[in-house]
Image (cartoon, rainbow, N blue to C red; front, side):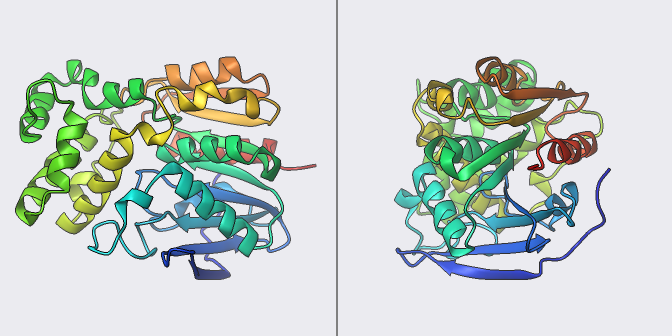
Amino acid sequence: MLHSPIEPFRSGLLTMADGSQLYWEASGNPDGAPLVWLHGGPGTGLHGGGYRRTANPNDWLIVGLDQRGCGRSRPLATEPVFDRSALTTRTLIADLEELREHLGIERWLVTGGSWGSTLALAYAQEHPERTTGLMLAAVTTTSRAEVEWTTESVGRVFPREWEAYAAASGRRPGQRVVDAYLERITDPDPEVRRAAAAAWCAWEDVHVSLDPRHEPYFTTLSADQQELLAIQITHLWANHGFLGDHGILDRIETIAHLPAVLIHGRLDVSGPLVTAWELHRRWPSSSLVVVDEGHGGATTSEAMAQALIELMPA
């Protein structure tokens, strides 16, 4: 069901008011129905463009971007000039709006995976009039409960690995692991930062590993890439995406009228199915697709392709 690989027909760097530059690319049909893809992490970037294969390039104008601070956007979150105080969900939403206006798009389908699903939901809640619908995979809302599950409670499933991960955080008594890691990953000493980033990334590969088809990703990255990812993830997770303890769920009524397809793996122990279920339960116009997979994969991609057929504007 996936489409053949395609390359962007247009790309660029959009300069924001604060001087940051956002990398974006457009592929598919220039006159097609617009959709935007929001990558995960936060901080993974677009990778090689596999996201383009889920949408029919004859029907869709497919927009992708490297979110602020990562990928081909500049500056990177690890550069001294990067303003970490600007790395908030509200700023990322504003970046999306600036890009939409720059491309002359009136409304678009908002799609995303993992962290990208949180950002997609937050954007749609802020700008429902600019959103035709949502397609979300490996659904998260980055609530306090989800962050504490992924960084603390899921250690009950992987006790040996979690003990090593918690010990490497150097946390003080009573301090949350995610807060301790944020301190170490922003430490002035580069060796402290790199060691913390490596330990964080080792845990990232563990808590998504229940799917027998899982292949390590974070531990295959260079030290620079690990640090770039870890600083963004810990910053946004420690602050629960700057959305409040239950931010997304507390505002679900603002998008309850929009069509949505939520796709989630039953084997995704790192982000349990209950998050997608709770969203679906409160969202009358949504449908929930459960696949026998973990935190993404081939079956999820096929379900995304089918969802985009269903969400194609008439």
